[in-house]
View 1 (cartoon, rainbow, N blue to C red):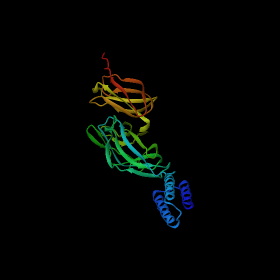
View 2: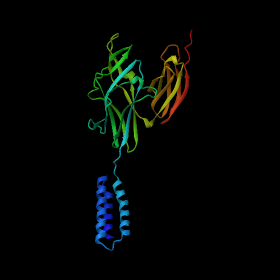
View 3: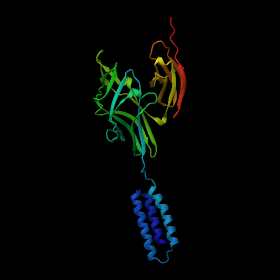
View 4: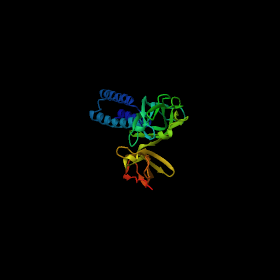
Amino acid sequence: MEYFEKIIVTHFSIGRHTAIDKENCAVVWNHTITFAQKTIEQKSNVTMKKVISALIALSAILFAGCSMDVETGTGSLKVLLHDAPADYEAVNIFVERVEINNTEGDEGWQVISEPNQSYDILQLTNGNFELLADVELEPGFYPQIRLIVSRDENSVVVDGETRSLFIPSGAQTGVKINVDAEIREGIEYTILLDFDAERSVVKTGQAPFPGFLLKPVIRASNRAETGNIAGIVTPFEARAAVFAIAGDDTLSTTYADEANGEFMLVGLEEGSYKVSIEAREEGYEPKILDDVTVEVDETTDVDTVELDTTPTE
């Protein structure tokens, strides 16, 4: 058995100290089978039982060696876009492509999707999302993504009129967003991009012919570390705006649906929030809900909140 013992020791050493890919594993295995056949032919005292025993042992060692300390798998990344609303009829953003960076500098950018599509981000509220990217990536740390936005194909609709929405650096450097994504083998990582339309659309010039610039304000969060707040605001005709506030910061905003009063504040980290509800129509008193708790991967339901009418004198 000394011939087989030498092979086993040799390949065990290979498996322990080097990364053998699938192709090389096959080469090693074929070499071993050939060696076994020659040994049987040359050594009359080698029985089939000994050969089979040695090959079984070697199979286990090769399996361990070929799979030990070798990361050949990938993780998956999804990028979802949603919006904090604004008092426009539409805000259309044309996304040419999405890129991600695995370095701290300007090197290492790679394209992960090319939507070449316009999105009315005002439709992306109350739990509605658009999928911007769905890609397999090598495991590792990815600090930033960026959206390459068209310079000339964005628009805002005001009083039924479509106006151009110019983004100064959209086609050159793109809109960079810190995400600090840790991609792990076999794990899906989902980034939520909260596009704040109210703060992103900037009026220039004077009425009645104002111009508009797009200076994107986007907050990123890891969906696996967030939860939501949902409920209903009545009466529906109050056209309520709903805010999630932590300390002095408003972290999420939405408008209650005008047809059914439903709302959802998404992408909130675990913690306690103040929920402020304000009517966009006159004649209603605002309402504050204190200490609304958000847990990871859960939606906290605050049920139905009724706004009181403003007393008349």
